[in-house]
Image (spheres, helix red, strand yellow):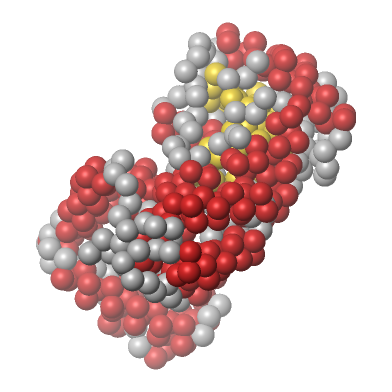
Amino acid sequence: MFENISERLLRTIKNLRGQGRLTEGNIKDALREVRMALLEADVALPVVRAFVDRVRHRAIGEEVLFSLTPGQVLIKIVYEELTIVMGEASAELNLRVQPPAVVLIAGLQGSGKTTSVAKLARWIRERQRKRVMVVSCDIYRPAAIEQLRKLAEEVGAEFFPSNSSQKPEVIAHHSLEYARLHRVDVLIVDSAGRLHIDQEMMTEIRLLHTVLNPIETLFVVDSMTGQDAANTARVFNEVLPLTGVVLTKTDGDARGGAALSIRYITGKPIKFLGIGEKTMALEQFYPDRVASRILGKGDVLSLVDEIEHKFDKEKALKLAKKVQKGRGFDLEDFREQMEQMLRMGGISNFLDKMPSLNNAPKILRDQDSADKEVKRLVAIINSMTIQERRFPEIIKGSRKRRIAVGSGNKIQDVNRLLKQFNQAQKIIKKVKVGGLMKIISGIQHKSKLIGGLPMKP
């Protein structure tokens, strides 16, 4: 996400030259480029105008300190204004009510609404340790109820059964009564979507809201629709008291116009980002961290958060002990590390949050291509015997041919895997015993030091 705008903004600021202060003259071209970058990212025009005017007002006459360049000063201003546009502070999910806390999910059909219900259920279960139940009030899409049932089973949430012969408000009432009687902490209600906004849809969602009296009413919208996402959210907010927005499919959106427009146009905060199809692919939205990512500064705090909740520390410790005993790093360990990366959202998601890695090869920054390549490598390792995984040096000509055929790849692909493994093996040998855990601890310590401090250019 934000690849296009990030690349253009960084190039613009890098080319900025000036003397001891920023003036109308030396930032005129830079601001023109910033404006074009935002428009090309499909940011709504009123947002672009307000943003550029605020940056110009703050930048003109700003003193350039001895340790900074004009470009760095402008980065600082742009960072702070991006944060303001997107909401300044993270909007927490509010569940502080007498259980059950009801979360009503609304949105158009095809926006990823039902999947978002499952992702949110998983997030609440794992992050807040609460008992979660989900229910579908979508009686119009035949597969919606069954889809949610399967997803609920996957994420470990309870599922309240419903069927298409019932009225949505009846389903909502019965599920709420059940949740109260059975001490469910959080009830998440999936409402029906439409291909477009119509009166029938609005009447139904208002009725559901009246029956449920939810503490949170979240609007799910596809980020790929750009500023239309913000406009759709605005229309919903006019008839329904929204408390926040879930922006989906951000892993396929290189522009980011929706994220930069929604808060300004609707006045409602983005609370979550959907960053992939898997049920664990949900991130809490932090405006300051996203602004940092846009400007190529990475997002170490979110990376630490993912490591905390998605990285299997027991397996990391087991690997460290294995290396300590001199048994070495083999292909089974290599496969496990790649699978860990996929569980953390994939390579491109990892690179997106790492500072100074915005210039990584394009194939690695493309979520589908990068993850596809990792899965290919995993498939090659799966085609090996246990002996070959543990003793890679025995993999020669005939074995390579068998492995390539078995995994549906070419011998060149097997050779590339072995080369990458050898490089990883050399790195592991240089890491002291327990080094991986020390690295994680170091990142966690660093995050505590920098948390809450303003970003330095």
